[in-house]
Each structure stands twice: as C-alpha cells, then as structure tokens.
Length: 34
Image (cartoon, rainbow, N blue to C red):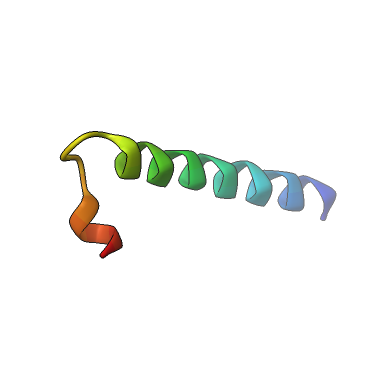
C-alpha cells in the first residue's frame, strides 16, 4: 500500500513537471492550455 502510494506520487510529480515544461517552452504547447 505504501509502495503504491509512493509510486503514484512519483508519477504525478513527473506528469506535473512534464506539463510545466510543455507550458513554459516558447511556442511549445500553449494551445493545450487555452
């Protein structure tokens, strides 16, 4: 259970970082966030 929760948090943080990078990259993916 604890391991699954840790894995879920790691995945969520990775996805969040990826989304942030896409959002901040100039001309990268603003259309996704309109």
